[in-house]
Length: 270
Image 1 (cartoon, helix red, strand yellow):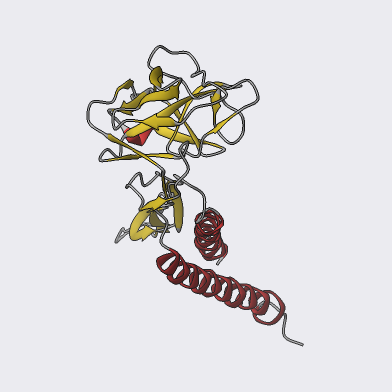
Image 2 (cartoon, rainbow, N blue to C red; image 1 turned 180 degrees about the vertical axis):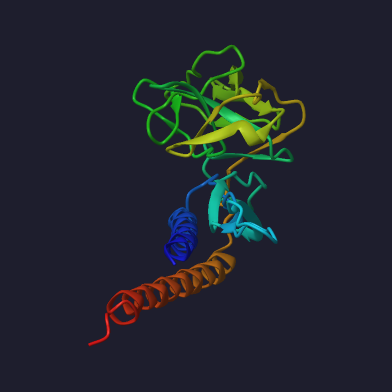
């Protein structure tokens, strides 16, 4: 009876994890470059169940000691559990902004902008950049955007800025185009080991080895929208809530049965 309570509780916990994951996707539906996370669910470890008993001794003349027997009954499942929450790096739709410092990467799901954060070098698909008071190209939270030389990109205080498809940045100064740097676009051979760190940044782990991206196109004046699907997320949210309710009812039913067994079945006859 108690085993069933744990099994139903594990199902409710997985449903709650799914709700939390969907809520995160919906909260970031307007976040540029956001990548939704998926929920991988697997069955919890199962156990073989045996009926352990002692068979009476068999003898035509004199009783023999009983023989212990473990009769196989079957497999007991223990519910479900979250296996992993991998990120879906499928490219989002492009949105035109007309802002010269807004850029998006197209044509390569595994390519990222490289930024210098307080925690070290990180990677992002959010190209909503700004120029800070010192003229350095940064992200919205102030992290410098790195160029191919590994240094931050210094912009002039005046002059139109153009960003080519390969990420080369030029600025119009005194009727001349001055090359001020090139965006460092990094790609990874294994996106499974690229983990979100917060602030729309990713950090490599395991075999996620960063290398210079070979095929991509930088779109100036565009931002990549979130790849989360609002309609699909709402449908999944309803499914997860029904899943949670079903497990909750199962827990209540088993709890009532246990209560009956304790207070009624085991009560001595008056």
